[in-house]
Amino acid sequence: AHSLLMCISRALQMGLQIGGQVPQAYIVAMGETAQLIPTAAGYRFIVTSEPPVLMDYIQKPVYEGDNVTIDAMTGEIKHEIRITDTKRKLIGIYAQFTELDGSKHADYISRGDIESIRDKWSKQPEGKAWKNAFEAMAMQKAAKHFLKPYAALKEGLAMALAIEETEENNADVTFSDTD
Image 1: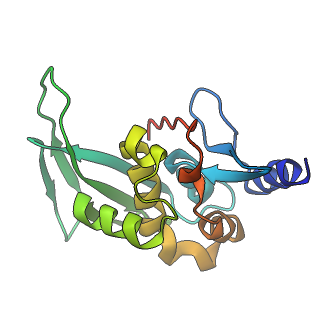
Image 2: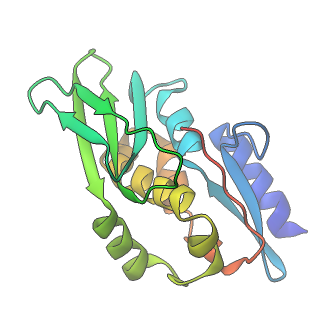
């Protein structure tokens, strides 16, 4: 019960919605304790809410067959999506950052790099959360990767990034992210 109250308290401190239509965080059972796990949408909320660290932060998945062009000078992204009726493999994730002064820049992380982060830092890299919800887990890890440079600028972001990564220990976790 104490760990559940701590999760709720942390979510309130960061202003995160737990569950719901577009979940910003989940509370996951870890044996007899609970763990608060922010989603990619939760990280976006943290960096753009008052006081903002970024004016906007957009993160999108890239699939086999998509054509993505990132202009390094302007930070603009052109994403041509290949429409198909079959499930395509996630090959990477990009992020576009709009700084408070309006300037933009972008970054990209490949599936291989996400898998390397998973293998190095996750307690169960072959756990059920990674098997059942790879894309959502990848989006969450990519958000953490992209936003680490901003951690010193906002306490709520630093708090969210510091949360121990043990979510993959729970077999019943289902992640869904739209951002």
